Length: 69
Image (cartoon, rainbow, N blue to C red; front, side, top):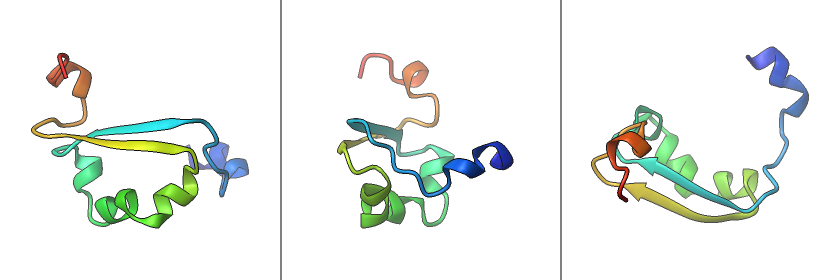
């Protein structure tokens, strides 16, 4: 919940990261999400971002929907 996470507001994710999302995931299709993910803000929040992978035809549960990809 936001109250428990408040002390970490503005923190950066400082580990090597591969971001994988389905192109039909409601999080990815939320207005503004694609612009954030593919823009400079996401890279700023996750400085060690190595790759963004978009799985076509998948929703939120990628490992169940596309286990072989």
